[in-house]
Length: 281
Image (cartoon, rainbow, N blue to C red; front, side, top):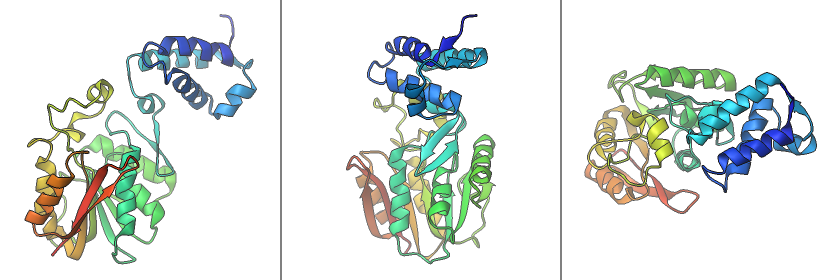
């Protein structure tokens, strides 16, 4: 088998991926090859003549074939970046997105105790819980998920990053008793309506449906959590949700109907209301 250089591999990959998305074909090819080789993009440009080992070339071809089928880059590499953290992800977890960093930012703005107890409901890969622990080491952070497979990923991320978070398998609050009180509960729950036409084919085909879709036009889980959370919050404890780009008004109404006070929304990097929360009365 003839050796294939970095430049040749990139050229081939760009051609293969052009049919998927011509605008991102070059960036996708570079990102995948850099991840495979354990180098940064500048290395690829500096050493284009360097040959790939046969097993590297085989792995790269496999990744490109899967990318042609619109599989997300993060599932190919098994990693995702979130709020400065490099996380492992698998098809058992949602891919952490930049929009969700708004939830972290909102949590950090709240006036809660310096040694707050914080619960991340539906933690998935642990992205939110770990980002909060990294930003506020003095906080006692808990993360729960109903999926054992997702929790394994969260626990591995916790170990890899050296961040201490307590993990529980729980269907929302099922693993907790009413004596468990938190100063802050955050959640990025399922909030997409089952018939939402804006969901991309890639998300629909590859990401876990149980973490995406909710009944009642996407509001069922948000409504349940808003009602149930009150018995698990301290006096003046806060509840924060990530939600869909058109759901802010509905979430505000839900929180007010459940007698939360100081209800407020936060905008994401695209100036879309993405996070809404309030304080327990």
